[in-house]
Amino acid sequence: MNRRNFFSIGLGVVAISMAPSSLSAINFRETKPEAWTASKVEQGIQEVFGSSTTINSKVKLKAPDIAENGAVIPLTVSSKLAGSKVAIFQDANPESTVAVFTVPQNGIIDYSVRIKMQKTGTVYAVVESDGKLYASSKMVKVTIGGCGG
Image (cartoon, helix red, strand yellow):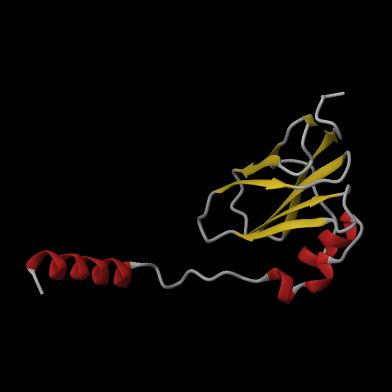
């Protein structure tokens, strides 16, 4: 084995050994299956968080006013809260729950995703922090033909 190969393999082993081992993802589709079949937003929030009482503040939801293509609607959810869980819901599709994220301790809440919506509807972002639910919502108009009208 030549010196370069030995050095690159050694660096790879060191990098892998230094990777954080405490990262783990929760599969909410397995742990909370009822949330993914909920047809109403309130049901979805109840299934994910155990309560559907929200406070409309401290969460910023960025979404377009008009989405010319309902297949790729960009969303950004951000907050300065020290949250533990973030979820996105919408009322335009048969299933209301879109995504659920577990926020690592001292993590920054700033998630950007693209979602699909069949028709015009309202998108909701909910952040759990210190046992309370903070929310924000935005109406997104989905145009069929992509002409903006």
